Image (tube, rainbow, N blue to C red; front, side):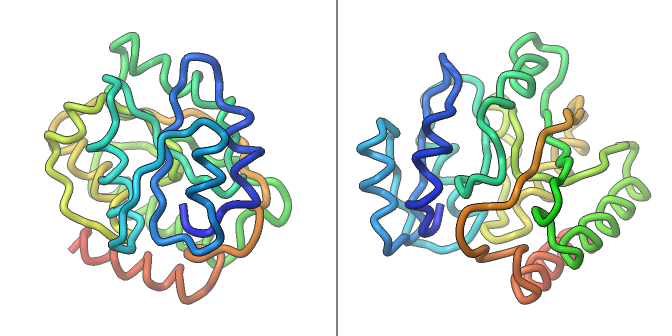
Length: 206
């Protein structure tokens, strides 16, 4: 998270039973870390900015065998997590992604188009039939660490999928609701952020 104090009560208040929230504070200045701690989450501080940096810090700090990732901005509902984690826990799938089904105003046109082009390229280069590279995803912690992901910026989500495919993982997706986030977007909600993400992912594809 980065300055998500306003969204955290809704997000953490909807955490399903049996799921232990671990929140990575990636440089917030609005007291997000204190809010998350008061709401019962374990808080990890990662001063190096970047989506991948925050995800890696959370992954290495996690305690459970199965780990779930999601944004803390209120755009994704934690109550969808059990549907994603079930195939991983049962051993049927190695990596599950949440395929976003966006409500009006939730997904800016430039970000949606960039995702569509990216996924077409992924399908062209692999045998995967995924429709989205969304941030909600589930895998086993030890196996994910073993993929040795190196991207610490916006390329992290794509690198995970590409390396999982190369390793022969079974990858699947489950539809999830995607609603307008709380507050201002720092990445794909802006043209500049989307261009940075596209650049990071294009480098991985090359």
